[in-house]
Image (cartoon, rainbow, N blue to C red; front, side, top):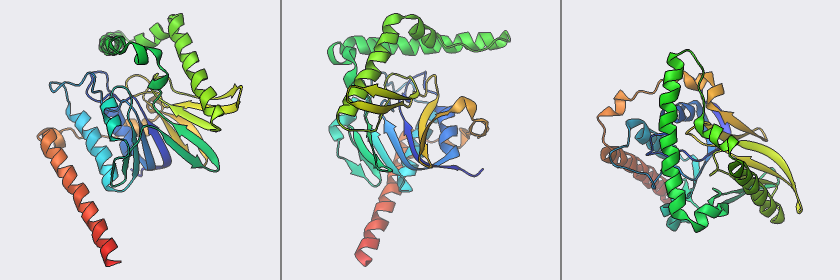
Length: 290
């Protein structure tokens, strides 16, 4: 199958290492596209809830695919979020085409774009980290319960439901938090003369124009790969929300888990690092000859 070419892809809130992560679906999506640049906008690996007892083959396959893109010299930006915040100490680190940064400012078609995860505007994150971590555990538990409920509903011939979305939509404080988050982000982006701002964090995919006291700005959120299964794509001068559930071509891609079943995380990473080193040495040799 020919891969769909995309100029920029923004992914966030994948939460590898948790039971709620939809790694298989993400792999199918990644295998269906050929991005020129990939932005990993936070909460890619969930360090908060990471457990050596739970690291499925598909989760490692996602890591392998991402490192494979780096080995092929696809530009990859990694912007850590609150669940993988330990990587923030490595800002400025670069390996091949991989760059780690806490925020990203780009100019695309003469318009300024600001990308960051968004947890800096979460009051709970800033002042009650223990409560935020407890909430993350509760959310993951709710996702597990939701998967069981949906399994039973499908057996009964009924459609799937999202318990967390029902909770968010029914709790006024949750709706208010999302609105306040978006308003704050847009106000600061417009004040700093940005035309577009992209966030993750709140698991709420969206593209909308917002008028602030400093002028208009386009707000975008890439959603997540636990419930919404969405990303942001930029192609031919236009931004759009990608939705896996509306992509039958990606859904039809076969993920061969058996091929990687006997490969441990250690051996897989060793082979990938070897591949990266070979690429780097080849590049150095080309420069020397030149």
